[in-house]
Amino acid sequence: MAVSDHVDFNGFMEGVKRRNPYQPEFVQAVQEVAEDIFDFIGDKEEYHEQQILRRVAEPDRVVSFRVCWEDDQGNIRVQRGWRVQNNNAIGPYKGGIRFHPSVTESVLKFLAFEQTFKNALTGLPMGGGKGGSNFNPKGKSVREIMRFCQSFMTELYRHIGADVDVPAGDIGVGGREIGFMFGQYKRITGHFTGVLTGKGLEYGGSLIRPEATGYGAVYFLANMLAARDMNLEGKITVISGSGNVATHAAEKIVHLGGKPVTLSDSGGFIHDPEGLTLEKIDWVKAHKTHRRGRIQDYVEQFKGARFHEGKTPWHVPCDVALPCATQNELLGDDARALVANGCIAVSEGANMPCDLDAVHAFKAAKIMFAPGKAANAGGVAVSGLEMSQNSARRSWSEGELQQMLKDIMHGIHQRCLTYGDRGGGYVDYVKGANISGFKKVADAMLAFGVV
Image (cartoon, rainbow, N blue to C red; front, side, top):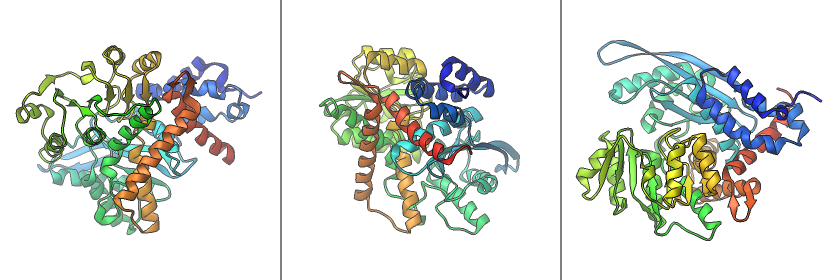
C-alpha cells in the first residue's frame, strides 16, 4: 500500500509545520480541518493512495509581488502583495482581497484553504483563493488608495480572469477599492468581464452583496435554532466587529426578533443593554463607513450604553454570539465564559475568529457552534451569483437574491447535518462542514487524476 496520511495524524501535522515554517495561522487552519477529516477518510484507501489531504494542504501556487506607489507628498512607498490560489478542482479560484497591516503569506494561505471548503459548501462551482497586501488604507487619502489599487492590479491582472480566478473584497477592500482595481484591469486588458465581484451596481455588481455575509451568518444561526425547535425571538445577542458583516448581522438579528447588545472595533466594545435598534445600527454604519469614526463614539450618541476599552464582548451574558471581526479574536477562556453565562449558539461571521481552544470548548459543552466556512459563506455565495449574472449578462431582483441566499444557507446547514449529526440532539457542525466540503473537493480531484 502507498504511504498514507492516516497512518499518523501527528506525523501529518509535523509535515505541515515543517513545510510551512513561521506560518501559525495556516497550520492552525489545516489542523482544524484534519482533526475531522482523518476519521472520515480512515477506511477510504483511494484518498490515501492519491494523497488528497496532503495535496489540498499545499496551495496550487502562491504569487508574491512588489507594489510600488507614490503618496501625496511625493514619497515612493513599497508594499508586498500576494495571491494564493489554493485549489480549483470544482471551479475558478474565488476569494477576497484584504488590505491590512496584519496581512502575511500565512494569513492568506489559511484564508485560501478555508475558502476552498467554504465555496464547496455553497454548492456553486467555485474553487478557493485569497489575496491581499500589508498596505494599511487607514489614514490614506482617496487618491493614495486609488494609486495603490492601480499599482496592485498592474501586478495582479496577469494571474486572474473570469474563468481563472475571481477576487472580491475583504477587510480594507470595499466597493471603492474594487472600482479602482476593476478600472485598472479594464484599462490594461481592454476587456469588460466579470473578473471581480463586489462591483458597483452600475457596472455589473449584484444586489444584496454588502448584506450577504452578515445576513447569511444569521440565517445559518436561525437554521441551527430551528433544528432544535427554537428561534431568535427575544434572544440577547453579542456581536463583535462594527464593519459590514457585524452591522448587517445585527440588522438581521433585529429583523428576526432578536436583541443585539454589543459591537466592537480594535479599541474595545460598546454594550447597549437596551439593544441596538435599526436606527442605531444605521448610525454605526454611517459613522464607521463615511466618517471613519470609532465605536466608542456610540456612547455619546446613545445614552445608557457603555464603552469597554481594550476588551472583547465575550463576557457579556447572552443567548447567542456572532464573532464578526477577525481571526483568533475569541479564545478558550472567552468560549468558556460564554458557555458559563448561558450562551446556547455561536455563529462565526468572520474567518476563523475562534482559536482551537475555543472550538474545543464549544464542542465539549455541546452547544450549537457554526464554523465560518459554513456560517459566513453567504458573502461568497452571492459573489458566485454575481459571477452567474455577469456571465449571462443579466441581473436578478433583490427578492430573488434574498430567497437564493436563504436557500443556499439552508442547503449548507443540511450538508453539515449529513456528516455532523452525532445523535441525541447534538450536531457537530465543525465536523459536518469539514467533511462535506472536503468530500466534494476530494472527489473532483480524484476524477482528474494526479495533476
